[in-house]
Image 1 (cartoon, rainbow, N blue to C red):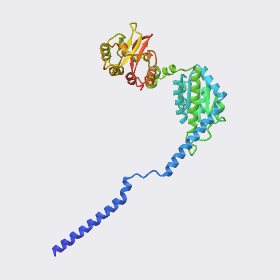
Image 2: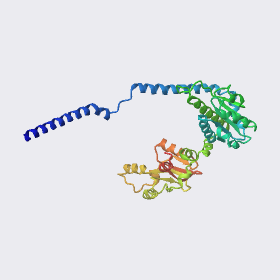
Image 3: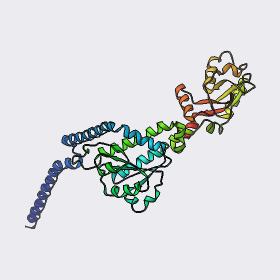
Image 4: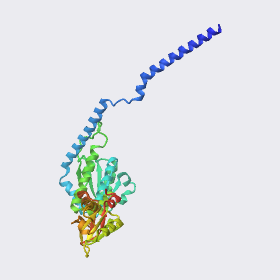
Length: 366
């Protein structure tokens, strides 16, 4: 009796476990794909993203095209007033226009027009003191009716300071009270609700660039002038770093044209630049010998021997040289254009040293 009961219990347990295992298998095969694979983005999302992005660009392109109409006599008056001013350009705005104002200030400063940013809200709470009598105030406002601008402009004009308004609406409050106007016409913003500043800020930034570059042209701004305001980073080095700043830290391998090959190789090996200059007794460059020249010479002279060879027999005549006061970036251009890794440096017509590609890499120019 007990054996039968035990058999029944074991059978029931076995079938229960078997049924449970079956359910687990069913769940695994039906649910596992949902957890182990990523559903691809629905085509409708792709369509929405692409359509919206292209619409945004189209609207902003239209705003920039309309901006061309604002490059007129009023624009020229503003640029000429800034160019003739002994003061600075103080750029102000509220919200997103304030952020654009900061970018305009940065561009003006970097291209030789002294400028500073003043937030319109802070101006009427103490920062107004940063404006000097010879400065010009440039106010950015799409609507031209911002409350802070309405308070700020009369205070500035009462001190005899000229005000330039950059507005989308010429009939706005700022449009009527500014001394000079820059029109940035924007019919609609890029967002579907026509609320988020997008096309309007694009137009403001482009107008700021137009002002800065026009002033740059009037000042005859050259790369050397640009370097004065950008001494840091790779950009600065491209504009001010010169060959003489690099080659003087290197050895100065040189042999006479009559130097025997053994001594020539010793000179190249000891100076570790992969080359040596061949010069006359006055220090004028006659040629260059590189590691490659030596390898080619050994291949050609294997049968005849090399014991009687001199530097002039191996050198490459009329080597590419560079002046010590040339920009380092010019040296890089010569190396790239001629597929070489070193240049002989000359000062006052005489050999001065070697500038190597490694020097340019070390300075971050490559």
